[in-house]
Length: 338
Image (cartoon, rainbow, N blue to C red; front, side):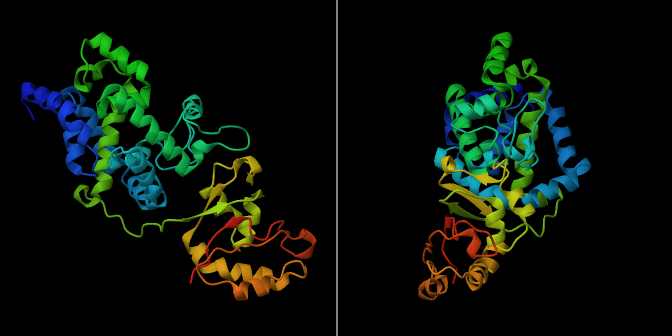
């Protein structure tokens, strides 16, 4: 769009008319937002596209393959907050989809939330747990924060800018420029934000349609399964229950900094690799049952009477009565797959 006046009119009309309607995961939304950038921002768009499709092509493909691990969780959080679905692509620009990512400024997790912001949004952050590293809870917090920012500025470009550099810096840029919209104030924003907005819009377009950018994304990972923990336990116990190594389980649950789930955190969510959950769940229970000698729990009988697909509830047993050392045979609620 080369006509500056036409561009300004489009952004003015779009901000008050179309912006509230940008709720679909639609490439037109992202194209519209790109068109609202100033001509001076074009080099940042070019650099972003080069970064994701040329110099960093392999990293981009790796991110897109990993996206299914977190996508459904982020989509639910965004839908519950009634904000646009394409915001789920922010973590690709923020953290490169690394749940344990921590910036030099102290921002952490997929959404790179600062400690003070996280606590204000209801996240628990201490030595035992950092919920900024929890995919669902951090996504809920990020969606809530983005909605607050959009409510403040009534414009998604300004909301994204505020998410990156803080609403105070956006308002300061508005005062300095004498303008309001992103294309009017971008020159007064921090350099990192000038790069950030084009990166978010570009990687979002790429993620929506990788082939149109010359990228082939095959063999995507299978989304994991989430179980609910209702009794204090630790990740090592859960790993042994599922006959899996602790490493992959820890990687999928980085928010439990010490690998423990305390009573104050219950009920808690634990993410299990889908292939482990579906192939080993019933086998694991049976293996444990074969080694139990405690007459307070007739696990074999319980399993025989347990209908497939219904919740399984067991009681506490002594750690000396089984070689697995599990305090609570089943520390979480689940359903046995058919």
